[in-house]
Length: 64
Image 1: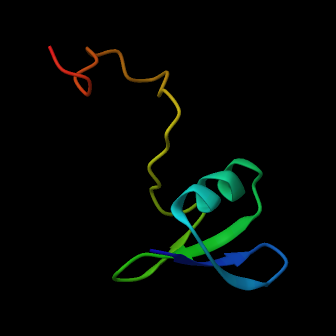
Image 2 (image 1 turned 90 degrees about the horizontal axis):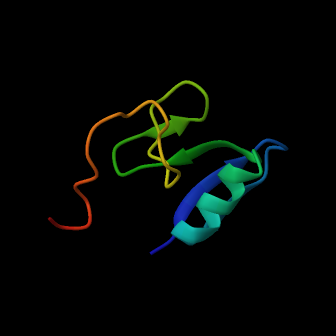
């Protein structure tokens, strides 16, 4: 599966999900396409793989 991405220089390309994560980390992505619409980086909510320092609850993703 690939994801359509528009870079900050206007280039449109398709990348693997890991490639999108890397490009987001380097702040190279202007927007990317989800199933239903384009997601504008900096405006629309985006999941991250980093730990969220604002979340103070228990870790539940890895079992009991």
